[in-house]
Image (tube, rainbow, N blue to C red; front, side, top):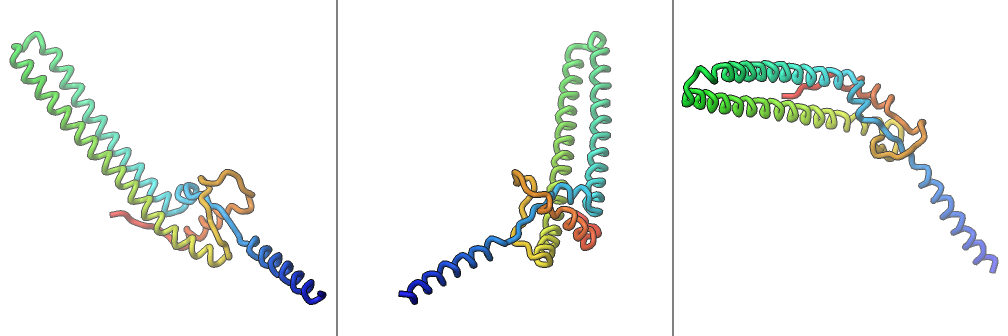
Length: 175
């Protein structure tokens, strides 16, 4: 009878010890937006995106000004021009407006595609940094901060990831 008790006690202790070992897996979270916005490479890419956006906006303003000027000029000539001539110029103006809208749409699409390529390249580079950080710090899981409801501040590894990212990734270019 004592052997059976010892075996039962041994199994209970064995399972409780194993459960405690598995409960000590480490979990951390990282704010990827912060890393992108504050990393050296991320800042450079943000400047590039802002420069392209600013250039597009200036072009859009110039196109809008040209259209508005042409529209205003056409309105002032409405009573002077023959009806057929006015309709012809109005149709030409509408055609140019559609053309300008297509140019604007294309430039916006190009900017959005560039942003997506930047995010993808950043994610690829960050993945290697995260893998290195996980191995070096024996972390089992890293969760995005955006997907986290609440957590201890000491589980936030954003600063460490940012430092490692700045150390390993000086810049990246999008073609």
